[in-house]
Amino acid sequence: MVQKNLIDGEWIAGGEAFRNINPSDTNDVVGEYARASADDARLAIAAAKAAFPAWSRSGILERHAILRKTADEILARKDELGRLLSREEGKTLAEGIGETVRAGQIFDFFAGECLRLAGEVLPSARPNIGVEITREPVGVVGIITPWNFPIAIPAWKIAPALCYGNTVVFKPAELVPGSSWAIVDILHRAGLPKGVLNLVMGKGSVVGQAMLDSPDIHAITFTGSTGTGKRVALASVEHNRKYQLEMGGKNPFVVLDDADLSVAVEAAVNSAFFSTGQRCTASSRFIVTEGIHDRFVAAMGERMKGLVIDDALKAGTQIGPVVDQSQLNQDTDYIAIGRQEGAKLAFGGELLKRDTPGFYLQPALFTEATNAMRISREEIFGPVASVIRVKDYDEALSVANDTPFGLSSGIATTSLKHATHFKRNAEAGMVMVNLPTAGVDFHVPFGGRKGSSHGSREQGRYAAEFYTTVKTAYTSA
Ligand code: ADP
Image (tube, protein in one colour):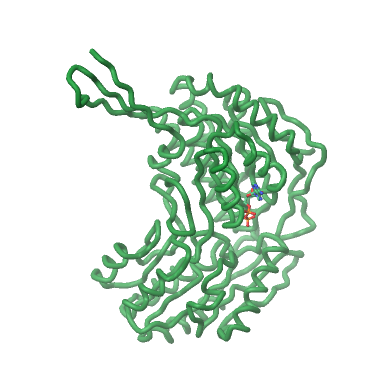
C-alpha cells in the first residue's frame, strides 16, 4: 500500500511513489510513499492559509486535547514507532525508541504550553492608558526537516507550531518518510480540523522549493545542510518572511590532563560515533592536552575495538549503518582526505560486511590532526573523528572556538575553574561538561550560533519566539 500525502484533510495519492529503503538491509523495503508535486505543495499551502483564521482562534482546550492525545498515542506505540524509525534511518533500536519517547514528551510539553500562554499588562508612560502585550500566531508555517532525526525534529517543530495557533505545511526528508507519515496520521486522527496540518512528502528541489517560493508561507523552520539553509534564508528575505535555521556543526570535545579518563572516553565515543555520527551535535574534533593525550588515544582504541556495528534492529548492536550510499561515499571520501592531509588513521575506517547488504562503516579515529585540515573544518556527518593535540587549556579553548560553526561544545575536566571558564567562553549555543556533545533534553532551548544556526531557539518555552508574533495594545480608560 502506498502511504499518501495529507492535503486539506484528505489523503491524496501522488503521481508516483517512492520506496523507503532499510539501510541495514537494502533488500528490505520499509514502505512506499506518494511523492508530492509542486502543485500538491501549492494546494497544501492554500489549504493551510484557508484553515488559519479558524485555527488561530481555536480554544486552548481543543489544542491541548489534540496535542495530549498525540503524545499519549506516540508513547503507547513507542516500541513499534521506534522500530519503524530504526528500520528506515539505521540508528539502533534503543536510539529509535528513545527518540520516539522524546517526540511524545515534546507533544506532552506543548500540550501544557497551550494552557499557559501568558502576556503582560503594564501601565503606559502616559496617564490613564493601559498597555497589554500578547502573543499571536504567525500564520502558515513551513516545516522542512532532515533525515537524521525522523520523529524528534518533526515533533519539535510541529508541536509548537500547532500549540500557538499556526497552520502547517510539512515536508519531511525524502529518505525517511515513515516516521513523519506516522505522526501526521496520529495528529489527523486526534482531531485536527482539515487544512491545519498538511503533509507533502517529496523532493527538496520540487516540494521544498515550491514552499520557499510561496508568498503565503509566513514563517519557515528548517533543519538540514548549510547550503540548503542559505537558500531558505535568501528566499525568505525576498518574501520578508520569518525564518529559523539549524544547520551544521563541527563540535569540539576538549579533554584536559585532569579529566577522569573513563568519563572522557565514554563521552567521546558517544559524541562521535553513536547514532553513526549522524547528529548535528556530534563531536568530530577531540582537542586533547599533551599530558593525557597518549592515554586518551590508547583508551579510545581499546573502547572502539569493542563497539558492535551491525543491523540496527539486532539486539546488541551499538552502532547501526550509515543512512545511504551517498552519505557513505561522503564519509569514505573524508577518510581519504584526512590521510592525504597527513593525519594518521589510528583506528577503523573500513567498510564492513554483515549478514545483510547495508552501509556498514567501522568508526574512524584520526590522530596527529591539525585544526586547519579539512577533516577538522568541514562537517562530515558520519562516524569519523580526529584528535588534535594541544599544550594546555588556553590553547584548547582557542582551537575549540576556531571553527565556522557554534552548535555544541564539550569538555572533560575535574577542574571547577576550567569548567566554569569553558561554559562562559565556549562560542556555542550549548555547552556540555563531562557529558557528550550530543544528547539534549526536550524542554530547554536547542540551537547554536555562528554558522550553525539562525533565528531564535527551538524547544522549550523559547520556541514561542519563533512561532508567535508579539502585539502591543494600548487602551485609554
Ligand atoms: P541533508 O544533508 O540533511 O539531506 P539537505 O539540506 O539536503 O540536508 O536536506 C534537508 C531538507 O531540505 C530535506 O527535507 C530536503 O528535501 C530539503 N531541501 C533540499 N533542497 C531544498 C530546496 N532547494 N528547497 C527547499 N528544501 C530543500
